[in-house]
Structure formats: structure tokens, C-alpha cells
Image 1: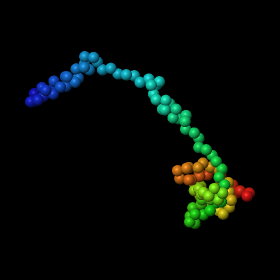
Image 2: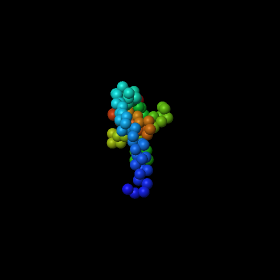
Image 3: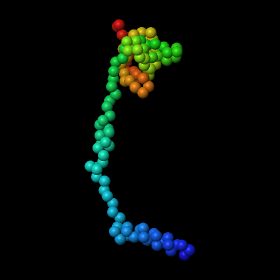
Image 4: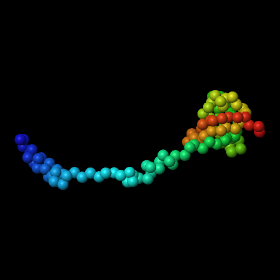
Length: 115
């Protein structure tokens, strides 16, 4: 035995004795004890809202197509550039889901407007 090892054993005994005497008790977590947020999180997620936007498809800097809504003085990025290019300069109805963080419409359909 090295010097000081006796005091380490004594400390170990002091801290571990309650476990040896009383045993280790464990608690079982029941499903009802889970916070309600966890159970509801998958139910609270809504499907994205599909909307219709009106405006004119314009070329921004000759590279990207956007939807310019003159009536509301706003413009939106369009994620389907190939489809948007077919309607360049035309008044259209765009059906899709708006990503408010990036002002980008995830295009589902573009049709020429009769107006």
C-alpha cells in the first residue's frame, strides 16, 4: 500500500456505504410522466398553406425570374425558374407555398392571367 491510499479507501467507503447498506433505488419513468409537449409535437405540425399569388413575372438582373405584385407593392422569388421563364413579362396566377423567411414561393403551378 502506498502512503495516503488508506485515506482514499476510507473516503470511498464513506461515500459508497449508503449504496451498499440501502441498495440502489431506481425510478421507473412512466409514459404519463412525459411532458405533454412531446406527445403533441407531431400533431401540432400543420400542412403548409397553399395560396394563389397574382402579378407579373419579371426578370431580375436578367438572371432570375421573380413575381412582381404591383397591387400590393411586393415581389417574390420563384423556386421554379424554368417554369417561370415561360411566362416572362406576362401577368400570371402562381399557386404555391410561401416561405416567409426568404420570400420565396415554392411553385406548384403557374397559369397566365386573363386580366
